Each structure stands twice: as C-alpha cells, then as structure tokens.
Length: 218
Image 1 (tube, rainbow, N blue to C red):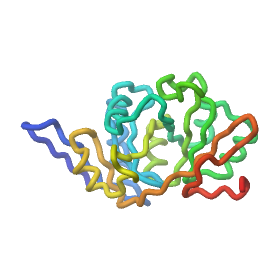
Image 2 (tube, rainbow, N blue to C red; image 1 turned 135 degrees about the horizontal axis):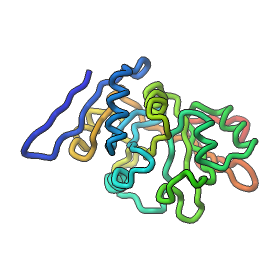
Image 3 (cartoon, rainbow, N blue to C red; image 1 turned 45 degrees about the vertical axis):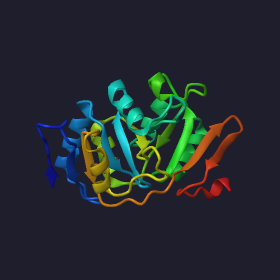
C-alpha cells in the first residue's frame, strides 16, 4: 500500500510505502529505487535499525543526510552492499577478510575496510581513507540493493539529541516528513547497534560489540 501526501502551503511531504518485511512487493521496491535514482533520500529498515539512504554519487542527497543528522566530515559512513562481489569493487579486501565477511554475512555487522577509487572521496574517512561496509539480513534492503544495481550510501537514523535510532516508521514520518522523499514502513525495528569489525595490519578487530556475534574473534 502506498500513500502520497502533498500540500501547497508547505514543502512536499515524504511518500510513505508500506512494504511487507518478509515478502516485499516488487512494484513498491521499483518505485523506491526510482525515487533514489532521482536524487531522493529515503528512510528504510535494516536488520538492526532504520537508516537513511541515497545514491553513493549524489552529493546533494549526501549533504541532506549530513544536515538531518548534523554530522561532521569525520563520521564513518557506510555502503550497504548486495554481496561480496560489490564489497570487493569498493574496498581493498584480503583473502582473510573475504573469508571472514563471507562467514558473517548477511548479518548485523559493519566492516571497516580501505576504500578503493570507486568510493567518492567525500564518503571516505578523511584521514584513514576507509569506508564501512554492510550486507544486512533484511529482505527489503536486499531487494532494494539488488534492484538498484549498486550499493546504497547509508547512515543510521539517529537524530541529533537522540541516543538510539528511530524504530517506528510513523515517528519517522512525523519528525522528518518534510526532509525525506520516502519513508519505507516495514514495521517496527528495535534499534540495536551493529558489531563493528575493523581490518588493520594486525588483522580483524572488534571495535564495537553490538548485535552481531563473531565467535571466531573472541
């Protein structure tokens, strides 16, 4: 079910798609991808929280996400990928890293890797030249990235002054309906941090323990 609300007195409001969390309606996924390709910023569900997303090479949309979240240029950004083939295009991935990521994905992990030239510089960490990578376990995300044909630029939907990501799509619409182009409602997603694994010269290291469990690194 899709709703579009507009008003002449105010800026156009975000579209609102109710998408089934386990069997996403492909026609709505296609409409969401179309909005992204036209420069839209969307709120969408992952396996750990709701997040904001746009195309990776859209500077205007990226700036809007920075503004919504009030982020500085030292923030670690994330690319949400469909599979390891996409990961290896955008990061310098060793055989060991490849095997570890393969074992732990899809899942609630963020992997910090050295970025390749395919990643726009404004998305990389300014000093480390790294980028975060995610392959979430959520049918809506998996289908979105598959239909888009490239990774999504993504940032957890934590608003300034909040400690946790917004979990209810109705709240997201109420608070951001004039900032976003689309809110995807796939039900409530309780906010849990991902587990961050950083690949250093010494090997993989858990730098934040979250929802994802990596027994081989204990």
